[in-house]
Image 1 (cartoon, one colour):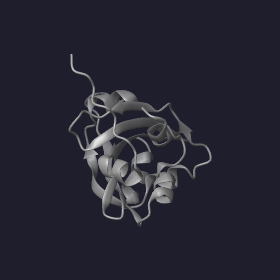
Image 2 (spheres, rainbow, N blue to C red):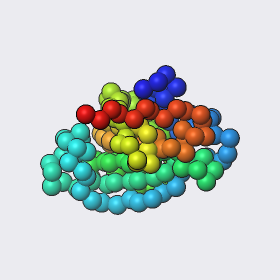
Image 3 (cartoon, one colour):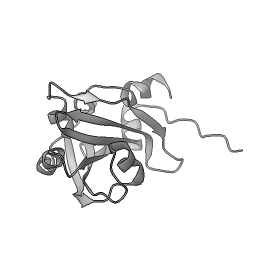
Image 4 (spheres, rainbow, N blue to C red):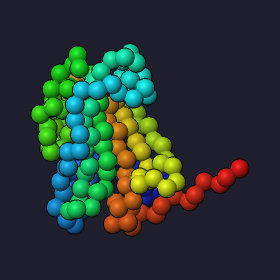
Length: 160
């Protein structure tokens, strides 16, 4: 990953604040889906949930004007107050609330490259804790963001 991408993918501050500052257009959060459902297996493992547990899932797109920059998915166990917080956000940014918490703890960021041909470029996720609240936040940086900010796309992986 080049340094320009790492400034986005590896940042530990509020992604929302960074996107607002970088966007030359109005920034907004578009709610795609939210509700109670079974998390993916890797999400359940990351949160210490049993494979049969359900959680509150919220999926949004972070938009620069009408251009989708980041697709985000948040997962909160139902037995915690975090799902109530996610449930009431609607089209407000999770980051604007999350990073205002004085006791916020964040696990290391996990990073993965998106498969060729997908609409995203890089994926990242990390688990957050605030008091009794625990949630997993996953963000996919999209091609429109790369194009708008002049971020180079990764070289295709060699095939063997």
